[in-house]
Image (cartoon, rainbow, N blue to C red; front, side, top):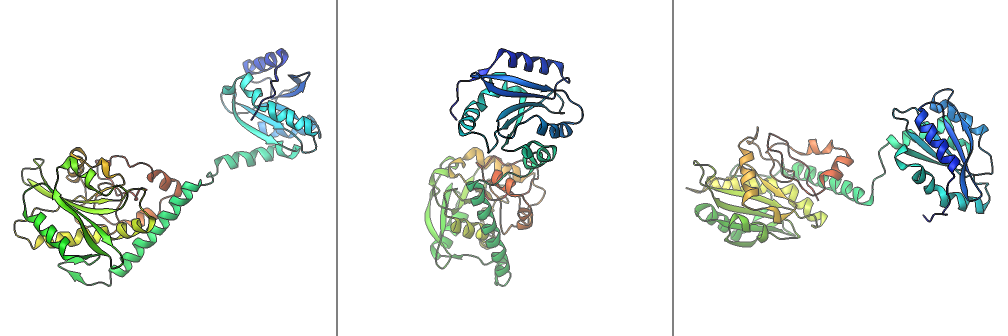
Length: 380
């Protein structure tokens, strides 16, 4: 907002300084614009609580003339409240003048003294009851931004998809002890078996082809741990199996790491599809490995990310290391959180989170905690 160039008079500056220093002798300083300057027109001492004293302003303020009121609250530290009183019945010129000078009041006297402000268009807006409503409004949850509303809708859509998937999945038959979810194409199944039987560092990337919900082979080639992130689709969800020879555990020189990548730019319906079916893909892979002699074991910790580029050797090392400290790794979630997630049930915990927590969890993913935490919700 533009300013009028009007500043505080020497009298106002001195009066406010004395009020700040006195700590308790002044409750209100009424300020008006006179001769192109901000001048104090009355000073009122405290006689009760702040809310009680506010009711006395009706006798100080005028129906048709704007004014500023500097009000000392009862908060520790002598916090001040700036009241900008501009009645609807004021002259247009006065409204414009007081509006354009408003910012100068607190800035010129020291913004650090003022911790709150009220904009009033009638005397009813500056009573004790009105101030109580003002405080209640400040304490209430803030309205959601457009982005937060989108996140909330995505959360509800994903939760519904996960619930629907679990309900229908209970009716499906079992194959090798694993729930049947997406159909594995012959190319994907053959590549997975080859990945399991080999000893090299290779990456198998698959996507879900719709309609039909069939796993489709995207790529199957040698790759180092540091190359994994660059070989995943940058803007679409994907599942990947990384055969990783490493020296982190003498008893397990090579593991197959399951990776679920879901970039934040992915379409909502794709996120729903992949997130609700990732558990079934993991289970089916585990069942296939049990039938292959000499196959590398499937890592007990699923790796999930919203930023494929972050996956490298260091990231995977931390994920596998954290799985050894996980308190539970026997069951597989049907709806997982982001990053590496300890296996366990899911949706009930997510459903209880507030929208504000949801908005925070959709921010850029941070490295997961390393001591028995539960899965988080899918970030976008």
